Length: 299
Image 1 (cartoon, rainbow, N blue to C red):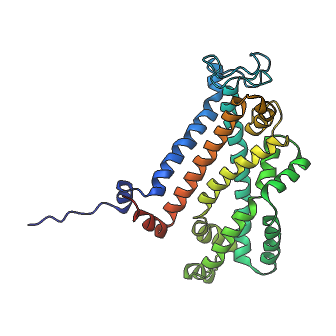
Image 2 (tube, rainbow, N blue to C red; image 1 turned 120 degrees about the vertical axis):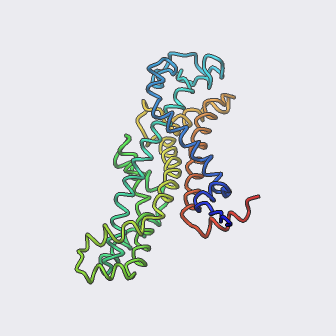
Image 3 (cartoon, rainbow, N blue to C red; image 1 turned 45 degrees about the vertical axis):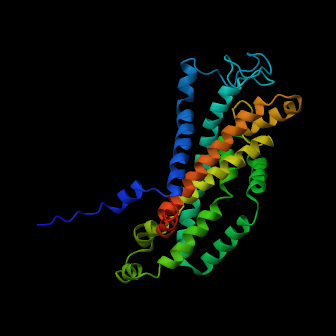
């Protein structure tokens, strides 16, 4: 009797031969987790004496180059660049996660309601979101930052407004296409309420692309926060923030003081790259057709 060898499940086959995007996604996850660990354990490292207080100025020699005592050197104000670079990840993650979460919480329900109800509500919301979407994100964030002022919550609000239309447009378009499916019409025929149809039958069918958009928006929000900090509109001065440190380092850069600008800028770049790779990998995982096309190029 011959024994037929069963093929492993598809998800195991994908793991044995990951696509290029899958490999890049693994790199992005490692980078993102690295910054997440730093942000979570930064306070503990300071309590254990492994990191200096990033807000304590004039306690170190001024403009000391990287050395064994100060790995990333010191700034003009006597800050330890290494501790401020690590604690900058904590501030960045707080603002970015809060900003993207706010835009998701507002944009997704509006997209569901607009796409399902249609009519005048849909036209008004679509016009409003298209108007916001046409404005440059950084310019809109700068304008709002002038109004709401500095602070983690205020910066998150200023940044989140620019991303609400993106969630709205994605969810609305998916809702318009899904609401004509037979299972939705069957639920309507059975007398299901609008809330039940939106929450049970439409929500989980239209949010497939939301995690990808969330990750990519988080990467973009880091750059926007850095721009606000560089313009002096981000977080309070006592909070370590990469954009603010880059602004302070710009004045000393022509004199050969390179380390105060290199390390905060490098940390910002790495976090953006890591989140972008995670977003691209999620997009490849969610889109089966794109995953099959990419797998053809794997050696």
